[in-house]
Amino acid sequence: MTEIAEHEARLAAALDRIEDAVSRVETGPDGAVAPEAGDVAKLRAALETERAAKAQLIERVSALRDKQETVVAGLERRVAQLTDQLDRAATDLARQTALVTQLTETNRTLREAAMAGIADGAGINRAMEADLEALDALRAAERAEIETLLGEVRRLIGEGADA
Image 1 (cartoon, rainbow, N blue to C red):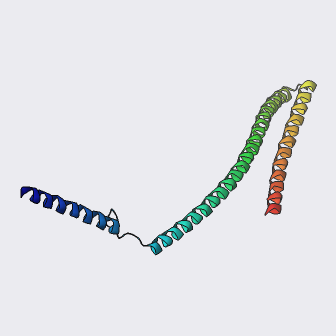
Image 2: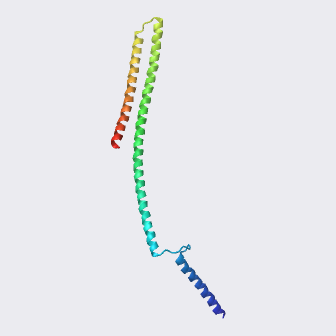
Image 3: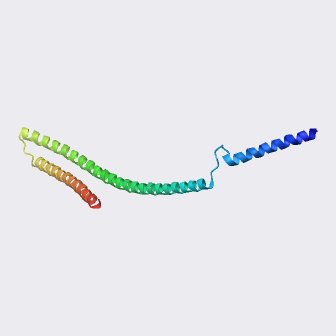
């Protein structure tokens, strides 16, 4: 009889396991109700919709990245131009500063000569040369400034035509 009791217990355990397996199939492993065929179709349609939305987003991100790269390249060119202009302006400023120093020294020498009553033709020539160089430097700086302004106007006109 003990064998019969053992077989009954094993049979009951097997039936319990079968019942659990059937309930898992009906509800899924996490306890949720298993989807029906119509639900699977709806889920697949939703998945395809999400895939299409993802593809659109990827395209938009790619377009934005391309636009950003174009803008960055333009800005880098502009920074290079401005850096070049700044370097030229610094060079012009250094030249003007040197000429002003030379002119100041020459004028001091002429003033001292005039106070002493000495007419120094070479000193006057040096003063005139320094004055002319200072005027040339001033013209060069003005020319550079005009070129900078014209460059900006050209850039703005070009941007207006592109818009």
